[in-house]
Image (cartoon, rainbow over all chains, first blue to last red; front, side, top):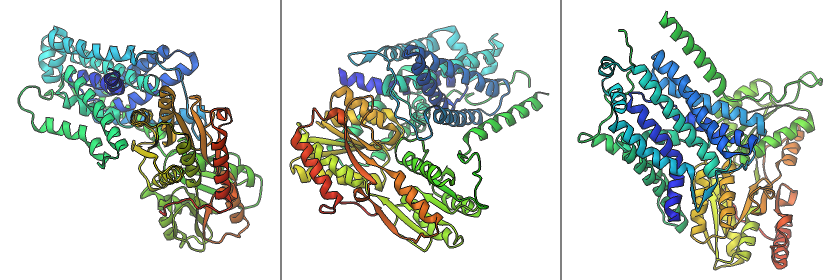
Length: 287
Length: 335
C-alpha cells in the first residue's frame, strides 16, 4: 500500500499540471508555459510557507501565482492573439529568471539547502494527493458530461460553432487557461511543500514539458492522463531500483520513455480520441 | 490600433524576458576600489548557477574570498560548451588578470585562448594541459569521500551503503569510486550501491532515488546532488538512516541525519592563487589540493559523536592522519 502511495505522491505534481493542461488543450489552447508556472508556484509557495509557517497558505499562494500567470498569458495569447508557443516560452523564461534572481537575493548567491514545513500526511497519504485523484474524475465528468464541457470542447474543435451557439470562445478559453494555471501552480507548490520540503533553482526540471507529453499520452482524457502520470511515476521508481541493484541499463532510456510513448500515441492515433482540431489556432471574432 | 497595441506589448514582454534571463553578470565589484591605475581583476566561469549550494557555490565563495583578501575586482558568469571561449576572450580583453574556469572542461579552451592573451592567467579546476599562463588545480575531494566510506562500512548494520549522484559527470564518478574504495578497504563484504538522478536541481528525484537505495538496504547514504541534496537528507530522516554531507560542511542540516561531511575548503586555495597571479609569480602547472594543505577535510558532526562508537572515531582519525602525511593514497580518476 505504501508503495502505491509513494507512486501517487511522486506523480502528483505532474498529474496536477497535466490535468490542467488537458482542459486547456481541450479548449483549443496549447500552453507550454506550465513549466515556468510550476516553478514560480513552487518558489512562491515555499516563500509563503517560510513566512507564515503554514503549508496550506503556501499551497494557496501557489494556486494564486498560477492563476496570475495564466491571466497574463491569456492577455497575450487570447486577447491579443499572439502566438501561443511564444507566449508560453516567455512565461517559462520569465519564471526561471525571476525565481533564480529572487532566490539569490533572499538566500544568498551561493544558495542554501532550505527546509520548510511540509504538507501533513497520514500514512503517506495527504490532502493534495486525494484532490489530484478526485480532480481527475471531476474534470473528466465536467468535460464529457456537462453542456459547459461540451461548449469548452467545441471551443477547441470548432470555435465558430461554440460562438454561434451563444458561447464566448474567449471566455471559455480564458476559463480553461485559468484552471490550467491554478493546477500547474498547485502542482509546483506540492513539489516544494508536499515532496521536497525545500526549494532549489529550476527544481521542476522539465516536469511541465513532461506534463504536455502526458496529455498526448493520455489522449486528452483526464482519467487516462492521470493513469499515464502514475505509470511514469512507477517507471521512475523502478529505474532507481534497477540502478541500485546494479542492473546495467542506461537511465537515459527511461528518461526518454514518456516522450516515446507520447510519440507512439501520436503516430498510432486514428481510432478514439484525437487532438483538438483548433489546438493552438488563435480565435478572432471579427475577421 | 490593435496591431500597434500587440506590437507594443510584445516588445515590452520581450524586454522583460530578456532582462530576466540574460546571464547574470554579478558586478559584485560595485564600488571600484581607490587603488592603482589598473585594478587587479579576477573572473570566474562556472558550469551552473552559483546558487547550487555545492560545486559552483564553492568556487563562488573562493571568488568572494579573493575579493575580500586582495581587493580585486571580481566578476562571474555561467558559461558552458561553445560559450566558454567567448567568455574567456571577453574577460581577457577587458583586462582581467586571472580567469578561473570551474571544471575540467575549461582546460582545453584555456590553452587555445591563452595564446592570444599572454598577460592573463587561465586556471581550471582539473584538466591535464598546461602552458606558461595556463594551469589547473584539482581538489582532492576523493580523500573526504574515502573517509566517509570507511566510516559507513565500519558502522553499517545492514552491510549495504549507498551513493546518490545528480549529474553523471567524471568528477562525481571519481568521488564515488573513492567512497567505494574506502568502504571495501574497511569491510570487503560491504555492498556499495549507487543511483544517479541526472539532475543536481531536482529535489524530488533525489528523494525518490534515496528512498529506493534505502529500500535496497542502505543504512548510510552519501550524495553528490548539489542543490537537490535536501531530498537525500529528507529521505534519510524519514527512513531513519544516516547521511553524509558533501562539498560543504552540511552537518547542521535541519534533517538532523548528517553524521559527517566531506568538505572542500576552497577559499585559501583561491586566495593563494590570486596572490601569486597578482604578484606576477604564476607559472603554469597542475596542483593537487588535498588534506595535506588543508583544502579538503572530513568533519564528523559533533552532535553525532554520541552515536559513533569510539573505535570508529579512532579508526577514521588514524586513516585521516595517514592520508594527510601521504602514507595512504586515495584512488582518483584523471579527467
